[in-house]
Image (tube, rainbow, N blue to C red; front, side, top):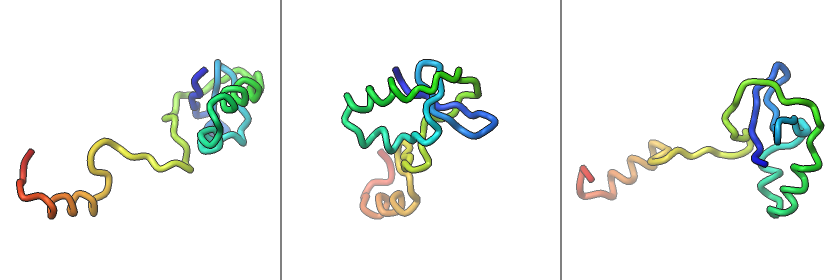
Length: 88
């Protein structure tokens, strides 16, 4: 029971087990819950509407996404200034 995200004509929606979840649900809300509560919510919030759409990255606009490595230029410049060796 892993939530996934689909892009639909009406916007993006979260999906569990092939059915759409409530459009008011967001990842931030789920992540604030204890694990057992989150699992119960996911089981009970399914609207039963079959999920049809294009796969979307499972991120939430309320969550900051960090990539591997240096994310911000300012951070990169600071690491260079701290380092005495230019390579690895």
